[in-house]
Image (spheres, rainbow, N blue to C red):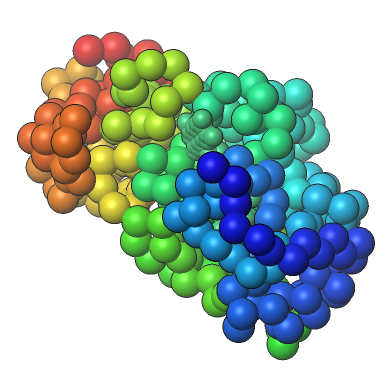
Length: 290
Ligand SMILES: Cc1cc2nc3c(=O)[nH]c(=O)nc-3n(C[C@H](O)[C@H](O)[C@H](O)COP(=O)(O)OP(=O)(O)OC[C@H]3O[C@@H](n4cnc5c(N)ncnc54)[C@H](O)[C@@H]3O)c2cc1C
């Protein structure tokens, strides 16, 4: 099918884009970024926006910079940018993003789809949403009436739902840099390479004097929202790691979630997959495979 008719706008500056959003958002004006989610939805006529505000011509949105201890990712930065290498100051975070991006869709989609577009689309199975929730991203929303910064907890509101207002542009995502001694592990289960995740986990661990001094355990794809699982983190914090302790943390993560259910995957299957993904991600972070 072809999309329903719409009016196309192609601003060259953020100011112009925000003015267009202010004018057209009340009449179902929408941002067009990489188009890798919005265009298929329009082609199926599941969405019929009257106006599309294409941000692809705004050069200042395509920058990735390191500022004030964070990697600042503009709304035009595509998935593929994380495959090619980031500023050297991005350190461990750059390695983490390069690992995760290889799990997103296929190469043609990664050359168009954007990091911020994934966050705005808020698919619970989006890898970038899991990264943002686990690492504690700050999301910068701009509109003609001002700018506000949101934590990931404030930003993600539910399945395909965020707290962005219709006239707001997610202008930038700020990902905190990781310490040089931070070790990470990512694991994802899907039926075919490039498919959306059925369950996935991102874990980041730091040790001091042989004990866990900092830990982040995130689960995505399994629930309506990607999030950190405090019940699992508290099992590891301050402890000396061993394989049995990682098993216990993975089981605690699985017990803490409220799994999604669909025709292909029951809630119980998702819970068990979440346990396996957390254990695998922890194993990759610590070198203690199950
Ligand atoms: C076959 C296929 C497989 C895929 N597999 C995966 C996968 O495994 N993992 C994964 O994470 N994704 C996957 N995707 C989705 C892909 O990553 C998209 O690129 C991403 O979800 C949306 O980014 P986009 O830039 O294409 O956004 P668009 O499609 O342009 O927009 C998506 C939505 O977000 C809004 N939006 C976009 N940018 C902004 C912004 N800056 N501010 C405010 N609103 C904005 C739009 O208005 C629209 O509502 C897949 C897509 C396809 C077609």
